[in-house]
Image (tube, rainbow, N blue to C red):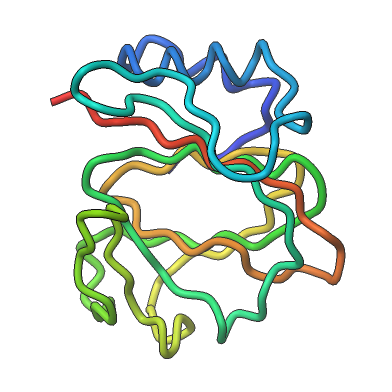
Length: 162
C-alpha cells in the first residue's frame, strides 16, 4: 500500500498502463465534480480497465467496518474532503478471518467483519485530502470514522494487467 497526498500521485506513473491511465485522469479532472456513482474512464472489448466510484458519507465506527481485498482490481482510494481512518494489513496476516468469501461479481473478499480490531499488527491511519494505492495483497479497511464530518471520496478501480 502506498499512502500520500494527491499532489505526489504523479510519482507512481510508469508502474503499469492502466495505473497511468488512472493517474492521468485523476490529475487532469475535477473529481469533486463527478456525479455520485460510477464513472467509466477506460474500457475495451475485455471490460472495464479503469472506473471511478464517487461517494459522500459520514464514516462509520470501527465495529461497523471490515477488512477487504480484491483479486482483479487495484484501488486508489482518494479522500477529497474530510478525514477517514483506513486500515491495512498484508494478506498473510494469520489473524485475518474470511467472513464473506470471494464474490467474483463485486471482486471482493471480506475479513473480520464481526471484529476488525481483532486483526493483530494492522495499521490504522487517518487520510485527509490524500490517497491510498491498494494492491491485491493489501487487505484494507476504509470508511472508518475519524470524526463526524462528511467525507467526499472517490475510489478509482484499476484492472490488473496480467
